[in-house]
Image 1 (cartoon, rainbow, N blue to C red):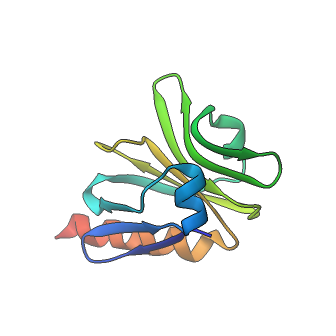
Image 2: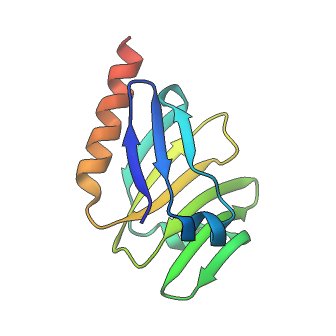
Length: 120
């Protein structure tokens, strides 16, 4: 499962070897200034587009870059029941979609770090 953390200036997403290999994705470090919003959205899978490139294993895993019209999503999901959706600006991807077991603490932590970063 992907790990989401923050430091004083960056949102850090660390992937497992499996996720990096099959999704053809890197670990991410995104400046908090580029984070435009974060939310818990369990219906997001109906809104992502076609996989290009990555892994899609029905009902088991979606890992990779997914494209729909002009939007590009960074998706890492491995049967977790909930999703954290992070909207970003000025990055390779428009949204980062991560499957998690408990989204509330992650969403709250990112929102507080973004708010603290904006106040500085």
